[in-house]
Image: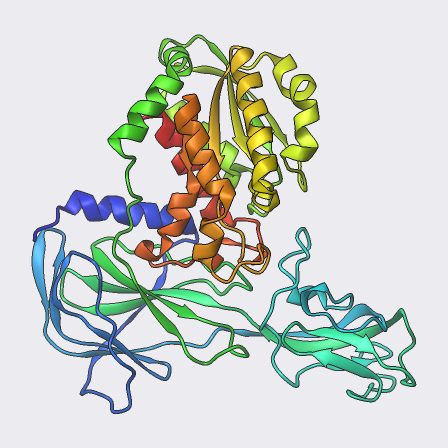
Length: 466
């Protein structure tokens, strides 16, 4: 099968949109004989691969078999087996960090005393599991290595998975005392296996991150065939091969595209003619931009940039009513005052926090939302949400999260009520096709999307205006 250069150029552009970390360092492979003891092979899933290029891990070495692949409209032969070294993530040393230590029992992610660098960020201080290098924690009464060093099992207990600390009865650490902790932690990384139009197999290195690793930007003239997930060194020494089937998002079905056009006909007309359009975003912390690295990476701002590029003549007034920690139970009583009093032409509704609500409450809330907004004369787009971590949803797997009532309810209501649908959940369910996993999209590993997750929201919303 032959693949056009335009297809793969567009695919690389999509991956770059999610990463945005600059040109990657690329490690060229070497032709080697097979290494004994290698794990079972993982075949590439990209339709551009005609033959071979089976990948095997042997510790921190990646072996790629010979094969044939389409790159830039040419069938390229990889003639020799290639061996690539996978570097372990960098280890960071922290010294003399102040930490208030409590006597409360250790409770994993809910523990009270966890050092700052073992959390997602200052703005989102959710603890992250598996970062702490075992046996690296030292606790002292004073900075600079002065004063006594407290003893594990005598003065304090530690949960090394979370880095959580608690003082022990009879120990030298008083309840609520500020001590000074020194420790080491490791991040995680996504690297990408690429094949050039010269038949050379290489590894593009991603940036190390505490959570939500993103793939590197891919150099021009190469094909990405897999991502390599390199977990935190304390968690596991074993990388994981995740084949890339496509770097293009699945297009809308013809049925959904036509449904969106009908539901948003007045909005589309105003965008095309340049009539004033009043748009209101109504949602929770995701709408407010939670955990995006900068305002320009909020999905709302990414979307607006894309919409204005598509309709340069449009005159759009935008109001963002994203409030963290809320759901439709909290916000529905203020719908008239907060939203409809602004006389919007279009309302975009996003509430991932509604994933936690029972089905009967969701039915009642969304019946009221749809009827109130439509009766006001405004058009409406509903988001299906991205998927929060299974642990938050008391679910055994990501598939079980996707099967929660909220996702199906939003799709059903959008179809039956003739309102627009931006189906982020379906994109999240298909992340494996893009060489990704759902947890890579969550900065706090719980609920907040990273920059790539925000870009997915923007992309799916823009599809409503095709």
